[in-house]
Image (cartoon, rainbow, N blue to C red):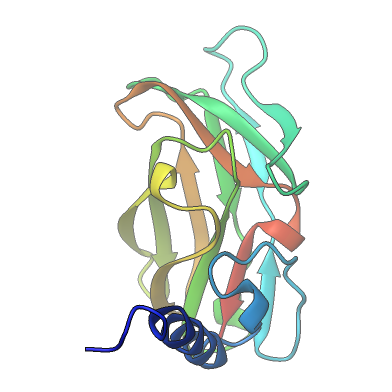
Length: 179
């Protein structure tokens, strides 16, 4: 077992090694990455389109900045009633048929709810779902791997109330897709 004085050095080396394995992540940001998504030939940045339901009175989506100054939006979790839908309909499948890693930007603040993310793949419009507990994450968070994804969405009807669902503003802080 290493001595207690060597443990911080070993942890730093491990963090550097992990950062080297994740494309686009620097060793300085190995713990939490808040850098904007920058598109490249095998890296796509996908921004949201937000829709508010007519059945919900008043403002449903709120603009803010997270704890790192990143522009974001958030809404209250709506129990079983859907008032806000956040849709990312950027057809990655039109650009590649490779299996891709999908990373979602979880804002630091105003993001405390479980989010049920649905995503659709080609060729038969098959829907898959994954749960992301925003309270347990911040920054770029790996959510799923898939090929031929053409739509991703979540809504505020997650079965809970008194929580906040947050998402980054624009394509720089939406989904970061590595193929």
